[in-house]
Length: 150
Image 1 (cartoon, rainbow, N blue to C red):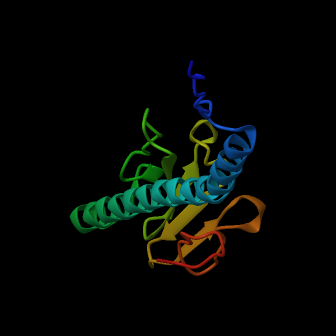
Image 2 (image 1 turned 30 degrees about the horizontal axis):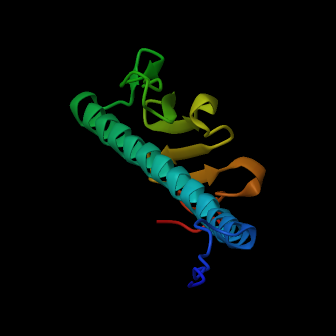
């Protein structure tokens, strides 16, 4: 009579320690990636706002060439551009006189851009201010958290 041989098999699946190591690795990667992604999204919204400021400024200069004034009545020659459904910034213009203006892009709180303000004048002087002192520069449009410019 022969004795049946028992073959030991390892149970299928993962051990608790393997699962915990995987969770730790994913957590570390997320802690690094999410702030970088958030910074990237903010910078892309800022670039969109500054492009719109440049476009508005070009329209104001065209208005001046056609009319020899930046004003239309007491307001700017070009109507303000409020933020649309997909816009992170609303554009407003203040005509100080027939030969001066200041265009301001103000961040929309609903788009996560509360506290952001970018300006440009008829001379091309640019300023930027962001929440908590970040994205702030008195001489250009800051696109990075440290206040560095384009």
